[in-house]
Length: 377
Image 1 (spheres, rainbow, N blue to C red):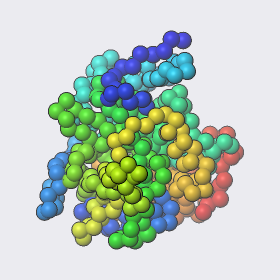
Image 2: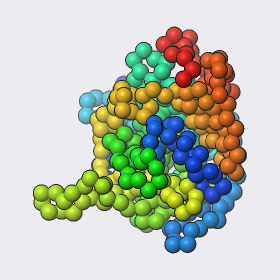
Image 3: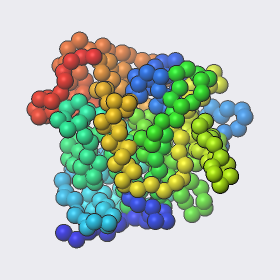
Image 4: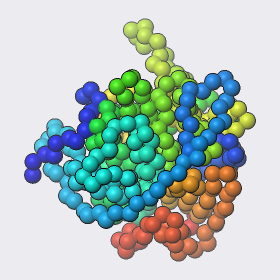
């Protein structure tokens, strides 16, 4: 079949591809649960952070529409050519995430629509690592065909290399100027300890508007980023009691290179933990990356024992009202935007499978159950 033409605009030659009211210690424990011991996976108000913290929040009200979606077939591409979703597939994804739009009309590339897109994705598609525990290969297919089939046809989720790749294609389709970046997840055992920067195992996107304003768009960081963050020193976003900001930093192992250039500055995403404490989530530059770089990061995440996802049965989902559902191994937690929390500890595997279906809409197939280690850990 002929290659599908892109339906958006790429930035340059880039390829396609807790807060106030939250218990900071409990949030840190949750992030350690997700990322491993000692590791921090680590209405809406936008603004640049001042010395005096801004605490104003706005209630977000949304409506959900239900549409019928049909499966489509990916196009084949020749070696060296860039593959994109077809227009039909783009509308299939919009229906899947309940994004309000006119029939056969793509939304305009505005800041309002950017916010709406991230909100819809986070509240419609779970962040999950179930393939690592329920398939023979343990691998996760991050080709466009694999992503579309898993998320839209199978109504499942994925991690950053699936979710943010899908988001990148949607951003192109809307007409945004966008490039994807790779990031280093930050780790630290305790508050105040030196930050350890991990390998490039997280993917996100940068969107640039005609006035020069840039935003970080990320739907693959544990379903916790409901809205894009202004990409500038002190850029901050607040929602549902959360505050996240962007600062500049330098890798703590960086040294001037042989040419005498100073160490490269990083953009670092941080989450407010209360009591004037900020926790580093991940750091990145605006360097251009390619699909093969994502494949390397995805391979490490899937197969390396050092990967935070390697041994975890993990599924997370944000809800429209800010409630957060987290299934991690033998525990299931429900956290509301006001900070209240309910924890369920599984004693039988069927209890865990029931929670998967009730709260995430996921039912494991017979094939997946065959390879699934049903031991409650």
